[in-house]
Amino acid sequence: MDGDRMFEPAQALAVAKSHQDIPAALALLHPEMVLENPAFGTTARGRRTPATKGDSACLQTHA
Image 1 (cartoon, rainbow, N blue to C red):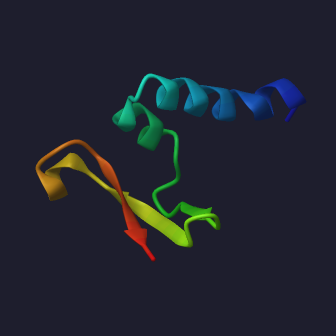
Image 2 (spheres, helix red, strand yellow):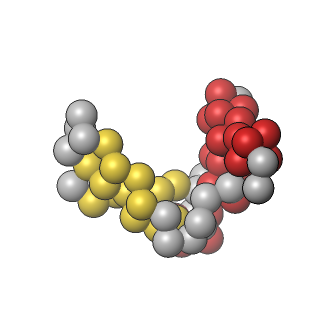
């Protein structure tokens, strides 16, 4: 895989986040993804769909 192709998913995620398009951002993430935020001491694991919450898609966050 070349460098430009490796950058494409990160760029697509940045665009989705900048547009606050949560469904588009989540579509780019692996279902078993882990997102750590050391500054806040939180870790997000996996995804929830709008059907599980009744609103916009959101991440499951575990402190």
